[in-house]
Image 1 (cartoon, helix red, strand yellow):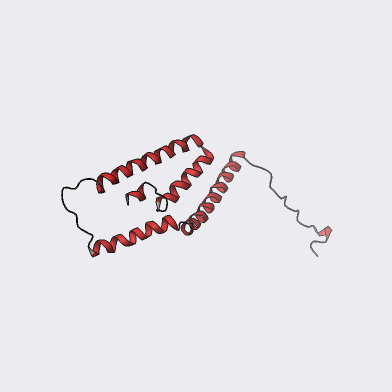
Image 2: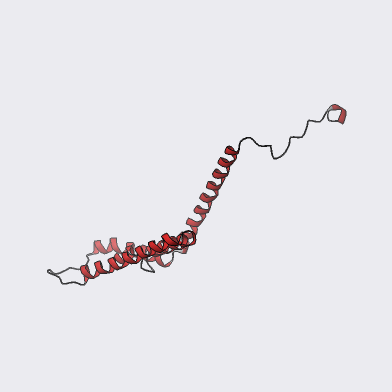
Length: 138
């Protein structure tokens, strides 16, 4: 699970990290460069942590997982792999909601700009009511 937290490709955090950095590079390259260095530093830290925890010398024996622990861990690992490898499905739902939210925010911003601009002329002038001379009322 340590590799999930550092954003290894194919695991659940990678699509989010990648898309965040990609979007940031499109708008602000310098902060994105700094964020990329931070992600690399987190990766180095995570790999060092893994080596110390799981590959270092041990002072006592370890035991395998029992059935209850496997019952809890296997669905969790399956979810991590599913979100990392098959992220397109959940991302479609997220994209739909993000587009809807963006449209709502744009409408609210436009309404605020119109309120600040003050009164304006109506877009369509009201048509005058037909008079009896024009044959409107008989």
